[in-house]
Length: 328
Length: 74
Image (tube, rainbow over all chains, first blue to last red; front, side, top):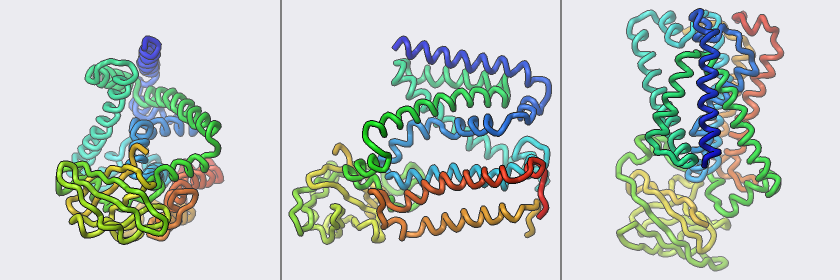
């Protein structure tokens, strides 16, 4: 624990040191402070953007996301994020650079010269980035609490103070340098661990196959409406846990399965009206809820080997249930 | 409404290709086909995540530096 704490203290001190060093260069003009004099090269900028993109959500949240929503869903989310950069380079960066201003607000206020734009756009940016920063602070607090054993509140406060300090005194140059340091560290850790896992278990495809054999739902596309993510994913009813237990599956017969509402009562599926070779089953009717195959039009997927236990989360009232393999 | 800044033809094709790829990928057919345990949709998204920025970077490298900095003719 002492070594970890020492490393974190060194890292935070390095961030502040970078901010102080950068402040000597950037406090001479607005261009130096806001855009580092436009002198940052492509490679350094790419690494900085990568580090900014690969935030707490990417490093910590992605495992839970893939586990809960499946790998295709997670890949689609990240493909959208990655794709945003080339699109932004065409649609946003080039006109902004040619225009010679620093912010989206400057550009839009020029294009649409109205006070509403001047005040609304920065307000939206501040609100959205505040939400984003809160997520990063939370990730920093959770990590520090688990890794260093310091209280969550103190960890969040300390990390916020350090972030604000080096960004405010060092401007874009400090942000870029610290991002490069963070990017190198993240790449080393992520690629190092991935390489070790692949070396031990085989190719990434083999790894994926093993994972999806154990938990087929990982490879499926989550069949949920987009609105299920709004408001914490529970639009009409408060969340509660459901559970299902698969019984022994006999060759040529549908799996015997039960569905249980937590704290309510156990329902028998009455025999699954449909099943596939990979063990997915469709339930309907008897429980008052509907479960359909992913290639149907519904949302409920119960997947697993015989005897597998899985748990589902109630989503959207009496229609949408989703079952995620757990504890296989 | 006309575009208020000129966009090179290559950029237009790039955006159109990405849009087409996204639309085709999100159609239900890619959800049903499984490759190595994962829906084809996931593989298509993984491919998009790699190919789109690589193509954009290659296109950027092919242009003269002055053209990258200045606006281009429509």
